[in-house]
Image (cartoon, one colour):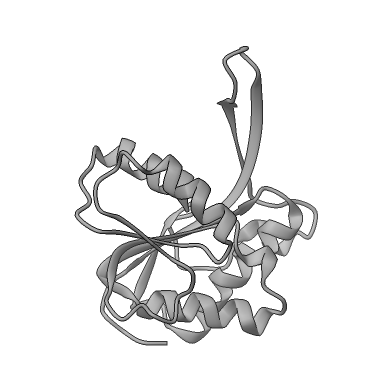
Amino acid sequence: PAAATVAAHHVWEGGFTDVLCVEPSQHLTNVGKYLTADLPAVRWQNGLYEITHTFDLIVVPYSLVNIKGQPSRDMLIKSLWNRLSPGGVLIVIERGTPTGFRFIHGIRELFIRDLGTDKFHFVAPCPHEGMCPLATTGRDWCHFGQRLHRLNHHIYNKVCVCMLCVRGCVRVSV
């Protein structure tokens, strides 16, 4: 969550009054605290269970691959959706691989099947509430590449991601 938090602060230029980063690994929490030390109002905790209030933005970076079974992944997404403020945005990011795409497409199917298309809007990558056309081919997957400058030695890495950005239209629990 640290990288997403730093990126969000750069995009919205510190427009957040409260940021909660959830990281189960104590080692990664320590790294995250170091990376976000200069940012205002960043809190850290180890799990979702203590969270009782809602958020305008929830970012779930590279987390689904670590959760065993589609029912458990669905439960996580439903839990996060229920913690979203009215009109809030849920962003899920996975690696730009066929497996990452399957996880993202599973979330898209979950929203269409369980929530109803009048309760949410898929903002990106495809701003429609239908099934993903690439998922029906079985030969391709939706992913995006971004070159990142990683070191001072001008080494660039290309990172590929699959993502889904969903905005809530009306407050509803799933």
